[in-house]
Image 1 (cartoon, one colour):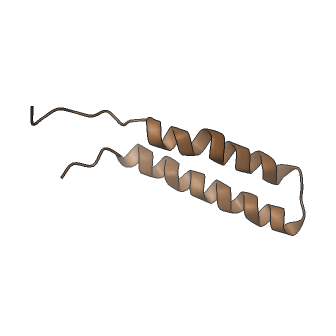
Image 2 (cartoon, one colour; image 1 turned 90 degrees about the horizontal axis):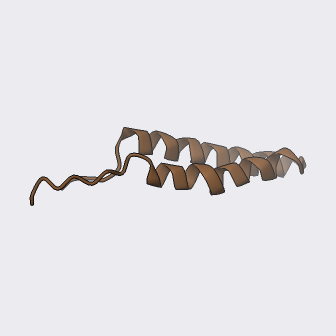
Length: 62
């Protein structure tokens, strides 16, 4: 079984999760300026990037 995601995808995904958690933690403290920026960066940029970057499918079996 070959996985499509490589090390770069996993690192970007972990960074996206950490950014999301940081955004929600900061939102819980009452800051209303930096937390939406972090959440937008995580949801709009980092999560899609972690899915799209480096997902080259090789056809070894065909």
